[in-house]
Image (cartoon, rainbow, N blue to C red; front, side, top):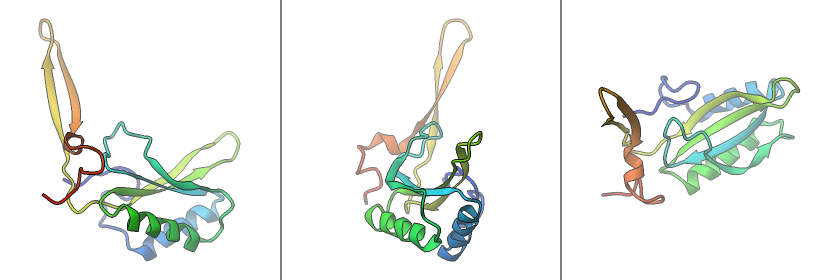
Length: 141
């Protein structure tokens, strides 16, 4: 299963050159870039781990790509994304976010149904990745 979260998720994997062009675009808009990673990409897991601090004063895409590659080296079997944050007053929000690394195997999700009183049914999405402890979720089997 291929996780489709963020911009460009329905496209083939971006090359480093294409990632650099997107970072250049974000920096040209005055947006601050940051790098985040996770091993559980549940749709409600909006708080991924930050790799370093947001790069508010950086104006060169090479610096952001260097952080992306350092994160890839440390966490090769995790999801890694680049965020572009607009800090202009009245916006102060994420303007762009896209995945730049994926694990070799993406386990996906299952839908769990619980029957309540009468005909009430509750549905929950559960990540297969969460069946294994953190740090071992994408280990070779």
